Structure formats: C-alpha cells, structure tokens
Image 1 (cartoon, rainbow, N blue to C red):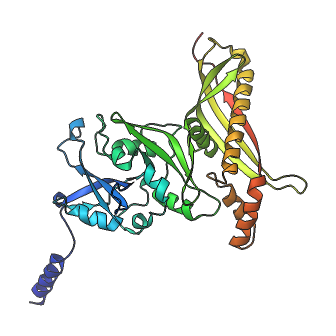
Image 2: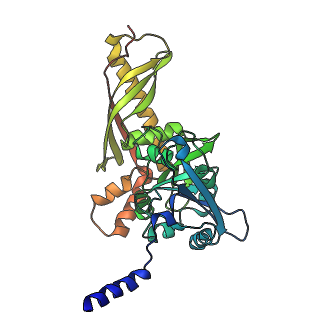
Length: 363
C-alpha cells in the first residue's frame, strides 16, 4: 500500500514540472539584437527558429524568423512567445548577432540577459550584423542544410578557414568587456544578395564602438594573434608583386621596459608557406631568400603601422596591458594606472621570419 502511495505522489509531482516533449518545442538557433525603429521602444529582438524536416537534404533547412519590439529583452521574449504555438528553447542558440546601428548608439552594455539566462550557452558565437542583425538572420542560404549552420561553420572553422574571420565566444566577449588591458573585437557579418560576407571587424573600448578594421587590417590582426594557420599575404618585389599562401603561423611577444630608453613590444612572428601567384610571371627557385626578405619587410611595416593605430586610439585587442599586469605586482589600480601612462609611449619592434617552401609548380 505504501508503495502505491509513493508512486502516486511521484506522479502528482511530475504533473506540475516544466518538461515539454520535443514536438512541443521551437529550438532557437540564432538571436538578433537591433535598435527599434519605434521611438518609444529600445530593442528589436529577432529569433531564428529551426523547423524540423524529414531528411538532411537542402530543402529541409527550413526556419521561421520572428521579431518583436520592446523596452527590454525579457519583455520582447515574453511577447514573442505569444506569436508561436510551442515553447521557445534557447539551448541550441549558438549564434548571437548585434546590429551595427544598435552598437553605435548603445555600446555593449546589453549582455546582462545573455549571461544571466541559464539556457543560453556561453560558448555561443558573437558577431556584428550589417545592415542589421535581423537582416543577417533572415538571409536564406541556398546550400544550407541546417538553419544557421553557415555561420557556425564560418566561426567554428569546421568549414571554411578564412584569415578574415575573428571568432569570439560569448563568455570571452563578456570577459574582455570587464578585463583591464584587453579590449573586445568582433567580426562584422554583412548580408547581401542571399549570402554572407565576413572580412572586417569592429573594436570596442569596453563600452562603445571605437574603430572599424578593413579586410587587410583584420587579416593582420589574425596573423599577430596567430588564431589562424591559413592566410594569404601580398608582398611587393622590384616593380611587381607576388602572393604567398601561408599554412603555418606562430606568434609571440614580450614587453620590454629598459632603464635607459622607451618601453617597447618585441614581437616575433614565424610563418611557412608557398608562393601561390606572381604578377610578373615565373619566379626563380634560386631567389627564394630574396622573396622571403620581401615578405618579411612588407609584413613588418604593415604590422607596426596597425599596432600604432591601436595605440593611438587607446585600444588593446591583443592584451598587451593584461600581460604587463600579470608580470608586475601591486594593487589593480596601481598596475592599471602605470600601464595607462606607459601605453602611449610604447614602441613596436616586429620581426617576421618567413620560410618559403617553393615557388609553385610552374616549370
């Protein structure tokens, strides 16, 4: 008798739990946060919902995009629930897009909801959408087999390996917003003609948009950070130029503060690759050392120029300040005050070592 009473009690308890069958859920795969066009509203929240199919062919990559204007993200999500007939499940939301106009006006102060929600994965990718997050989420990719999978393949580097993509997790983006000596940077995803273009990035000064990097600067940033292994480099040679396909990059740096002289960053970058194209025709294998020297000189000049641009805008996406703080003792306030006085005077000494393995297969 006691056994049956116990089972009945368990059934009563389970009857009030929040469990929903999978066929009664909508899985949110992407979240977009934009500026509302209504003057009395702050946000326009977009959710990309995966619609399950019967197979993995291209026709099964169906989705539904819903959007709502509100004065808080919480309110917008509650109102969005009134537009669907199933429970919204955020456990598969792996892409979070901020609209570029929204960030220009509001900065990156709207991470509270994303970090407090226990069902939002902190390993979600974060990026900036142009012209808006809703436009990016609404882009229908003809070859996409699963909703939102194109951006996952781009940022996760499980598909394309591009030297222009800056991949950033939500947890790391939030950390950079708080960490002294390391500034946030995000890729810009441009949507046009039913495809994505990801080759630029935007830098923040903890709060607001501060600097936009073009495609060449974004590629150089990835080289300095050594977050990629495959990238293409252009190098002038005599009255022409050639292009190198790099397949291995190693980068390291140290901060030097000599007693007699200005402080400087000593950066060393090692690369290995092969010449992929020449604008002047065939190249001679016995001149490899000259080609290597041309790549090194050109790369060093461009990298120093970009580092000075970061310094002059008081931005530190590579974490020079964080490394300085980790090697000096004192209170946080003292370390940070010292570094802020030091950074504007910092010089950059960059050494690039290029190892060319050949000039291609032309004979």
